[in-house]
Image (cartoon, rainbow, N blue to C red; front, side):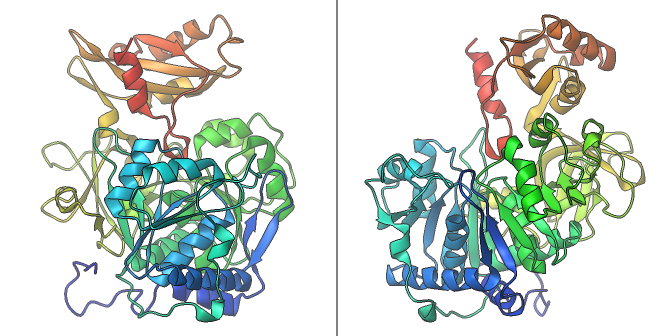
Length: 528
């Protein structure tokens, strides 16, 4: 049982409610309205109404109970985006089991750690990962495998595990349990760089908070159609997109993954009005014609009104959030102008604090450490599973969660992202934000993407090195690109911030949400 730290007698916004209540209520009041539209790459789209989806969730929950899954059990869901991922998540949650969604890019050792750490008793995966899961998750009672790999039929049927379809029973037998908003709901593993990934535990109240507050921040309504292609095992797609759509009774399009060539046709076919995106995707979309008859009214992304993406003609609100915060602790204004390249203002649902290393308040124009205060188990995660010490040490003596991010305080309450503390470089005693250098390089013609990391230096401690993916690949890179990058950096940055080395590559190692895995880039420098 997860206990909130609220005083006795405090009423929660979700007393008497849980995630099964939300899905059941929507199935009653929006029964025939499309909830999820599965849009695979090589087959026609398939719509699931609220009523149909609720029915199938009940049948799967009944089947899981029949297979021995009980309240409090941990079930590994190792799936790319697909309807089965959502059926499995909701069925576990309805049963009272804890849905553990894991990154499908995980290596064998990571999968072994995830399953062992949470004590998973069963796993649901797809043909491409069946052998990996079977070989590395030692404590499973059983494993079920869906029939396809994110919409594409596998080259051969998997030899391991049961058929996912065999799990379903009669929805009339869907399990009933006492409603407890503070009961555990789901687990997501954060990407670790210097230590083991931490398991972020959400309660049902956390999931409902994510649904309601994300919908409010995004100005979502029941007639919206939210296009989703970021991975559903991550908070962004799970809470910002899917749960927020569910809260208001809207429609959520699910694509297997991001595809620049398929984005606009799917958006036009289903009348998409909203998407949560990232700069990586937007840069790719700039290479395609932007249709005049699209229906998008808002995009949510990392920064407000980024000038390089003005060509889309769509208002873009910035935001900042973490798996631990469920929603955005900082968010742009939907109905008012925002400062371009900022991430927004403090969300009214949280207390946001920015301080220097000594705890003194940060002045306007300066960069400081970001911390956030909410209610654990409601507006902040419940705990790091099986890691009481990490949970305790992630909060300060005033109850603020220490994010590890650094931000710059602008005028009128606006905030600009600085960097993860671990992505700050120490160059000859000067603090340098990798993101500041990256922002200069990212807009240079011929640059598709840039990532800056620190390289050890005998005198200066560290110096910046930039990895660049050229627009048309290394083989077709303009001969002058190197000199153009250096000239732009020398013009826009202090001399100690100018990269000491440029490495041109065709791709970079990735972590969740297509973010560059900078720890891997640092290893490449160490091995040089």
